[in-house]
Image (cartoon, rainbow, N blue to C red):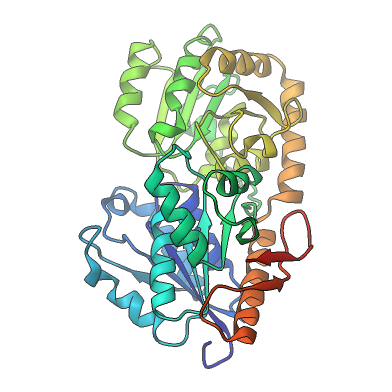
Length: 409
């Protein structure tokens, strides 16, 4: 605990850019109540070239952290086994001013557990942001025996992820807590017309998607679906995001005869404004938890066509907030998009329903409030027990669906 009585919290994440998980981690660190928590955001791969490729994203996060009085600690790691690079973080964890270390995603979860336990940090939390559950035996063993047993709680961002952590990973049910992601409401920037800025006609049909250009996001499925929709006059596909798949997607668009219809905008810091150029938003990933992009679509009042995977069916009720389609099915995706592009009234009704749901169930302040409560209760429990081992007994933490006690084994 800090000298002024606040709980010291270190948020551990690999990078500041790439995708929604990194943004969630930074949002949590920045939004913690400064009167109750001394927050540190530690980026363990600060020297990663990704930060240089998207400097505006990293710089914006750093500005927000500074304004919120959040300490920033960037580690310069030259490789996976550059153990000396962890020195600044180890010294911080040993200082006696850190009460909670909260890791995000697999790599940082492992390091949070290992370093947190070695340095005697009272509370260690691991946060998984959805992954493919591909059957990697080593990954399952690490998740179960290192992360699952070494952390006080493992957070899942969707009910489906929680189920898989328990049934596939073998993590004890009492250690896995569902906390849904949330975003802050964003009003459009006054005076901006994203269609005009992008050179898109006001009456053109536009479908769009936001995400890191990685294979699992399956933007190729969106392009193959789009090839079936070119009969729509002025049809455009807008994709926002950067990543290693860009070259392949550009080549595929050319092969499909979509070079003039597809717009790859790269990484943007103004996503909430850009997506207002869409008529219909798309998520065709192979797997997802609670993707921030879909929450942003809902907040913008957009209908969403999404693959029926992971946590997406928990966000989008088929026929209410959008349409769900089988994953990796360009024909089904094209049919759903065609259906909504042809019916403006239905699009607006779905978008309004999505906006209401996002506001009621997936708000950033609600998410942070749940985590603040979790930090304080776990710390109080650990302090009362004064034991270095994982907690045993019953403590009360607030979950998304219930305020019932959760048992930690």
